[in-house]
Length: 162
Image (cartoon, rainbow, N blue to C red; front, top):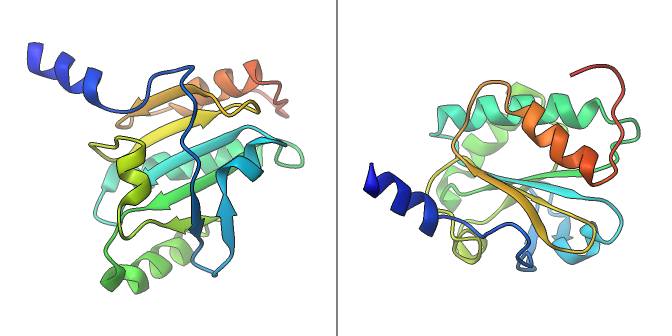
C-alpha cells in the first residue's frame, strides 16, 4: 500500500500548478500549442497509446462528454505516446473509433516527461489561466462525470443530464 501511495505522489503535476506549455503536431499535420488553446477555453489533455485498452475506453467517454458541450466549449486533445513506427496503427484506431478530437503525436515523449506521465491513460484539465485544475491516472467507468464536474467549475455548460 505504501508503494501505491508513493507512486501516486510522484506521478503527474499537482492541481493548481501551471501547466507546462508545449507545441505538437496532430495526425493531420496541424500544429497545436497549449497556451494558445487555454486562453479561450479549458483544455482536457489525455495521454494514451494504442496498446492501452483502458485508454480507448477513457477516450470514448471523453468524446461523448466533448460532444455533449454545445459548440464544444472546451478543447479535448489526446496525446499519443506510440513510437513513430506505429503511426499507421494510430490512424487506423482513430478512424475505426470515429474520434473527432485532435490526436497529437508525442513520439519523442517530450511532453510525457514534462507532465510526469508514468502510466496510461493519464488525464489533465487545464483552466483558462493555464493552471492544472484536475488530473487522474488510470481509468474508471463513468469517469466522464468527474471530468464534467471539473469543467462545470471552469464555466463549461453541457446539454442534457449526466
